[in-house]
Image (cartoon, rainbow, N blue to C red):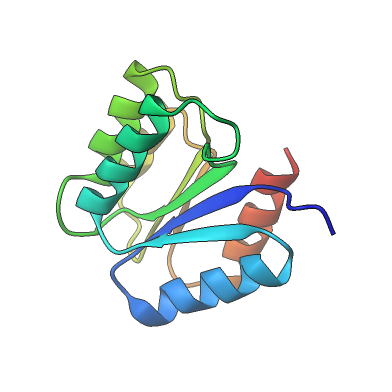
Length: 129
């Protein structure tokens, strides 16, 4: 099977990271698992310094509440640097501010709550685009 590309998963929750990673790898994606906003910032900086399609992710899936620099700040920085990779943010709460900020940054979706089926559907739609 051809490698369809990279997906970055950012969450400090090991069980969530493992579930997302296993699901995406099972579908043939190469997953870059990251723990926090600092790791995401470092990764995005690397990607912008190495504009090679092999290191540019097809999608970034990020927990909106990870420690370190905000994933929203990282997304804004990526946009300023010309990186147009889509983001899917997820949060455990119905945070309207997070939804508004994510949409302003051009995110694909904000997944609120713990609906695994909805999250899976959003990821499949984002990766099919």
